[in-house]
Image (cartoon, rainbow, N blue to C red):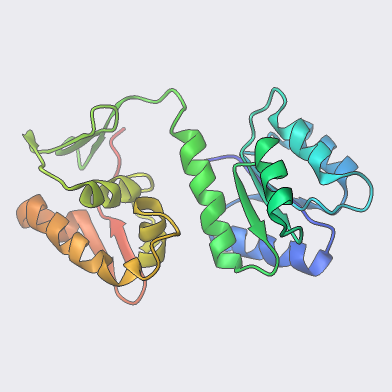
Length: 230
């Protein structure tokens, strides 16, 4: 499991709101409304990601952003009321991985945090091939290849993306919106309505055990039914 998420936001109600949504998504969370305290927490909590308000009462949030990138490479989602294009460009140039302006959707913010976590973890030194279901399903992300019972699965880019998303957390339920985010990105408005057809096609290629491999959770979404080996 990834390390904690550090939320730095001077508005207490907003800070608590973000914390609750992140915790509901299964993340450990540290919070503070102080830039100075944020610098201390960066050293003591080793966060996996940082949600950062730039408008802090004691020091400029850009100083915290610089500290998060200097020698730590902590992925940062900037959360701010500074909506001008120049401010966004400045934040991104200084190393922010994503930029969310207020007002915002807490659910979307959680998904953006998970997206930067997914990207950062994708660069870690992990085995290239991962097995599921006692080795029956094997996924090689480096080679962009999935095999079931030794046979290569001929997957479209979207089907591959859905499978990889589900394999990233076996047993965890992914909503259709989350799968769209992982596979296509936020700019594909309305794509959520078509994700079911891609899951159907993926299951067709997975054969007789498809419903056990990609399980439907009614009213919520989908999950990988097979456990990761080892």
